[in-house]
Image (tube, rainbow, N blue to C red; front, top):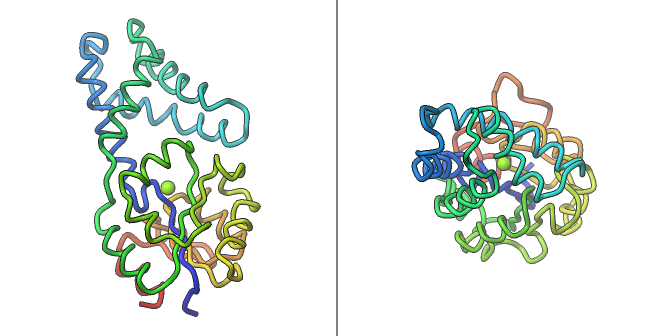
Length: 232
Ligand SMILES: [Mg+2]
């Protein structure tokens, strides 16, 4: 069945978050070389990712605040690396500044997004901080320009997060179609795939593992597959 509405996740689906994160950490590492000493960039990168993920989960559950998340991911990383002379808040400020400088479309995403948006109404459903997600959308203004009014949902603004069911229910209401008429494209197994499937949406698991496809999902890293599933 051809969908009547297509929602996209933002980070690591339309926008290359992972590369922006990597480049921002590389900038931090270079700018604070005297603090990192013998700690190499790859070690910083993997240690940061190891600590950042669980903190996002705690934040999604309401166990820590946004300010705590921003500070703790660097406090934990620097502590684990034995880097004691660099203030976590300063590291966080540098990181966030450089992160914003490296935002760009994922490979092929811009063309696919435009092709779909020309044929069908589209929207965005994203977790993340309000001001940061708004800033990303301001840097890639074509996204908001093509979204259906009311169908640009940022978790912090609507007060509910993926994968929680009310998030998807509100998004379907805003789209004005039945859940089974929505195609959702997202990269996170937990937030996007499990959340979308539970809400009765069809889901494309972007960059997902084809060996772990669930009912109603299709894992792919090829935008041509997404266009086909959108009925184009
Ligand atoms: Mg994502």
